[in-house]
Amino acid sequence: NTILLCRSVTRVQKQRTINHVGSLFQGSARSNSAVALKDPASNGLCNVESSGEKGVGVYAGASIEKFTTILKSKAVSSSSEKDKYSVQVSWDKHVQMDSPARLINHSCEANVGVRDNELGAYDFVALKDIDAGEELVWDYGSVEFDATEIKQCLCGSPSCRGGHINFEDSHESIRKQYGNFYAKYLHDWTHEEGTSASKE
Ligand SMILES: [Zn+2]
Image (cartoon, rainbow, N blue to C red; front, side):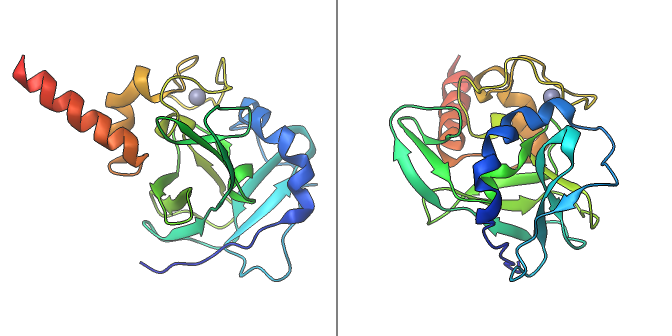
């Protein structure tokens, strides 16, 4: 797979608080007045944009082939406690990702999956061919075991899981949807679950 890096967009880092409510507007039309906050030095594979009503999101800056690694996020800090902006990477570790990964919104029908990487966070990989201009969305339930900040998802996708954006409640559908593209510690857990289930 070609690895095409999407550069960090530090300009919009201060707007990250908008990101976690962005999913409320998932599926709404992109405003014509969307303001691209693209890093001029980026290769253009993804752009951070703000479209007013919808808040900040990350969009494909070019057409992207299925299984392309779109960006590699890096853990910039970590804690044993989760918080609003952390992502879970193991049973007792929650990290803050750098931008623009941290600005990618949630959807229960993600077009981008995650794979553990050597930077303490996740690679974001295209799960399908993605058109230029399409919003990149990933499923927070593919890394968070038991809870996320989303109490009621309004992503609008036909398979929206509502108040169950976590792996524990939905692991069967998450595994079916995303194949291998979910957190490694959860792979290990489902493997153990499968083993114990088959013993029954
Ligand atoms: Zn949803």
